[in-house]
Image 1 (cartoon, rainbow, N blue to C red):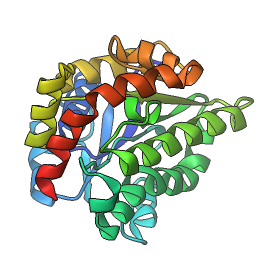
Image 2: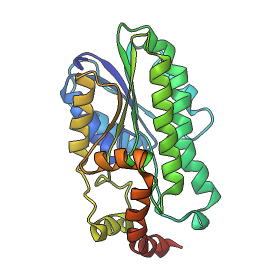
Image 3: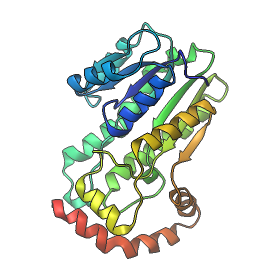
Length: 266
């Protein structure tokens, strides 16, 4: 898929990966519809991006609100939408017993419910194109259940399953489905505690621009299915699917360190 001249809707546009994606997509000549909560940050981002044609458009909306998907649908109703990128998400390092109910609800609402509802509403527009794409930004934790992230993992496992099923539903259409699963990334989504924990455990963290380049590579090469970014995370995802007991033992050894950082918020 060539990106020049394509109309692309990107949620979570002002976050770390979102900004890097917006910049990379704009530099490739795409026309962007940018969605995020912060109106001021959105406007600044829209003005800062290179523009090959009409100005990029912005919509400030909280995707966890009941009427948000309809607002987004109306926002892009008059354009030939080619790509939907469900990138908005939230995370928190916490053990389940220490997690507030409203935090659980928000993670599911933003990480899973919003992408499903938004895709449902925008699918008719995508189906009108000769070729189109639904791109869901997931997480390596959508393939590997990780202590301290049980709620986040549940939402991202769900997004991966949704992507897989939808890809098979649309197999006889021109709409493809790609699920990209980054490993830990250096963005504000990861708190200082998470960064410190990853450092203590020796877990690598990617730059958002690296993730954005991998996403663009997947779009341009017309990739389908799930792509886990990073090594050895890609290998761990396979091992966890085939031999979960191996992952159980490895994470059991890491549990005291994870507990130490998770309990700092309790």
